[in-house]
Image (tube, rainbow, N blue to C red; front, side, top):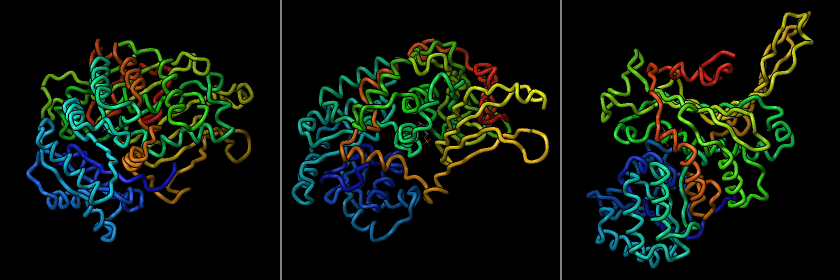
Length: 483
Ligand code: BG6
């Protein structure tokens, strides 16, 4: 990463009164300010339908930073940061509001030296993306190459709507101006996948069908839908997490080495591997929904959820990548809400070693070596392998070599949003999804979404329905099981 302060610009947050702005964007901007990574000359303009003035926005921003920032408030950082905040009230479709926003930005160029630089951040519900993009088009926003737009997920609801949205966006902006967020790519552990694979000579030699038995990737969340029942009813686990975050991580995990670190070279390789994934059939997917248990209410009891909802809060998927590196290696992806813990990790499970040598010791099979990439929390990478237990005779025990971010770097990785907002301000597309990539991801899940199989229940606080164990059998899910 080229660390430094980006060129002067105005950062405009659409949806400035919303939850995402409060929980993620304002704390991320504040931390960027604390690290000297905001442009030296910048303004942050909130835009939303709220009866606020600049001071009201500043007060709310302070409360948001106090509650959600990974670092506490430092008054010396806060003062200039707060001065850079302002608020323009208006509806997204309101021409008058957008005109006032435009005037505010022109004033910022004159008074704050933002030099016509604009970063429009759409932290709004997806249904508002078209109207905001069109409104920005009316303002002439797309015409300047100093303008960029950041679009939150979900980008579309399916392949057709993603294509439609891409067409609307391209009616105003060039692809080079567009930054589609997938915040998983902003996580340090996901970015480290490239360095881990291509910055070491060890792993690439075994990163293929000859050495690997299978790969499993679990994103478990202990939270439920957290008051987002209305959104989630329309989404479900496959759309909400598998189609975007998990397929993107899988891309970094399985792509070929790019020719350079150029963002397009990386995105080309990621696209190539996504293109090699077999589109999912409904039978490749197990859907689950949490039901009431002593650990808590069921999904159907959540606010804004239909009492006979068949939306899945859990999905387990088996997929194949048809290329020379991966042919024949199954990939198992699993994600669920209200699971026993919050934990995202990839397990690369190597082929078993032959055990004949130890047969006389009563050892019939050797457990496979495996590499666990802990994406969060407790970020790190561990290699598990067999070792001889000290003492006479030969008995084997699994042991671990473990790298932890906290231990090695004495720090917790920064929040994904900090990195992503900084990269968008810099114009670096590496960690953002390209038009063709987002459409390909929808293609992969299209049939499974159109013809969903039955939804099986699992108790809130459990590891998902047993059908997900059948999907991976005779192998076992690593998380939540004993090897
Ligand atoms: C979001 C999903 O994209 O990612 C949420 O909409 C999910 O449902 C969240 O909880 C998980 O993000 P993180 O960074 O907490 O793992």
